[in-house]
Length: 495
Ligand SMILES: [Zn+2]
Image (cartoon, rainbow, N blue to C red; front, side, top):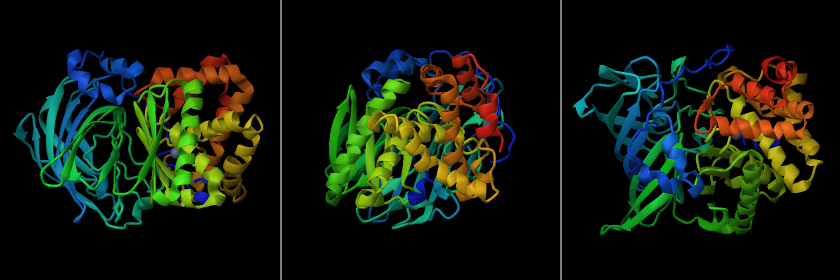
């Protein structure tokens, strides 16, 4: 659910000012000869491989990494091709170093940095979670630069910090955004906020990833994207080559005993990875993910990636979404009483592939844009599976209790605030409880035909882009040719 979803309650910066409108980008030009994009095509389902040619100057990450489970450490290099999509020159480029988040228990050190082959001297900012790379010459709009960074990451062992999602355990290692990531740049500038841990931290543009990872042959690499090559080396290691595109983030899991069941939905392969002792729940997780994928394909538009991985991990978050990969907490597999919660969480996280991975938003400052729609999408999944009555029962079970708890405590608040504006229970009650009811309210007013037309248009129009809150209201009002400002004020902007 929430990226950070709280189990039995169900589920789970800056200012209340409206999010900024992005600057108009320069007219896109082809980023490379067509054959230069060929390496990324396996990341996409065949029907969507043409999407690559229409991206708006996507950043390219070439990560060459080695993971040692004994230490546990990860090291290597990132070569990043970045284009200035703004209308003004850039004098600097930032990377986020999420492994340096306060209390993460781990650390990333970036040593050598070059820009177009010339050594540069970066500086750390934002409590060492941001690396500022100064440019000798301003980067003109539409111009590109190649940055190369050497990196070394220390990974905490058996960590319960950050929802136990950045940790090396005996049997599984999970590495969220383990490499230097260029954050979004919009009218507010570079986004370097340190969000509370109960919110998502990545706000980034859809990018192209080519990852080479070498590690012990005893480990299976489960990642965003598609593995295009796997080669055993002479020293008992295996080198994996993986591509992901267009993705805002790239997630890595290394496991030594997870089992897998798979199915296909059209050209998409869905993999469910689970502990051997949890085979029944792992098979159920696959079926839920398959049904969710089918429901959302029909309701919103096609899932574009070639694969979707559902991975049982020790995370205490319930579930967390990454592009092409969702992690689901082990407790949900092992608690039979939580069967419906497992189903809800998987549906919610699968929905994030549409709302976050493909249609991006500022998860730090406007988290309702993806979270509320992922919540409501989970309700739509249950309607498809269980019938029309689920519309009411799911809202009553998963949305209303957490919201009512906050409201009756006198802490009702607008839903369009940054994560940092809320305490954790307010975040759950307002963003995951109250804001999804906006979508139910406008659905009632618009009627189902116009409501689903709105969702399909919203998805098609904003694929691989970033939306701001006004785009939700604008697209919905266009679809119904009606005024939804009253509903928006009631459930999103007001209290
Ligand atoms: Zn979520």
